[in-house]
Length: 284
Image (cartoon, rainbow, N blue to C red; front, side, top):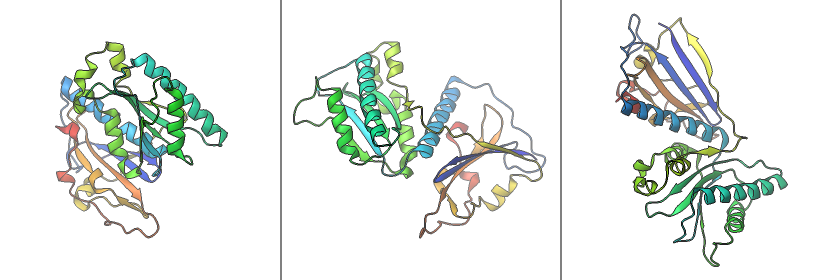
């Protein structure tokens, strides 16, 4: 039985997406019957793809030590989407100029948001540069100098960890109701709501494209029989292993990620099994 494997090179990580017919990849198995997707299933499928694609972009472009940032406004101020877009444009221009002066491209992923109490802010992942904390604070102060109150800090910065890329992607891509802040969004018009739920990225980021291969001389049954064996110098990230049947397409799938071992690291194991218990959220 043939299967198709999509391999994404993401730097330290490699992602594998395998599609096939049947539940266990055994000879003679048939593709499951396709079902008409319900709005809930489509929404879940689209959300999964949004989070996954964003995670791939983050893994391919950012590294441990980059800056996970929140740009805030003084308490009580309520700038609308137009003001926030204008502020972001000015801040981005200042940052781009600074990075260019130091011979480094400015890379970023950002989302504007309204908090549970109505406070506007901008979430931002940005690549590292020397004194990154001071640089971001200085440029944001210049951006909102008409609102900045002396002695206050309107920037939160935390070191980014590449192993937390999935959490960052989920947070940036999450729908307002998942954060309990949909009530604040309802105060805005449709266009502003779109602005507060969209994730934007700089144009200079790598957009991972898969290497696609179709295998016809052996089946994926070995994954269920023997588990997943990583390439030399890599290990399978245990929590990444998912499998199941996509009810919308009728195809079964296996998904997993490998991470490159660093010098001195010990592999958690040569194989990862348990595929029968690993299920994608979109299989529900």
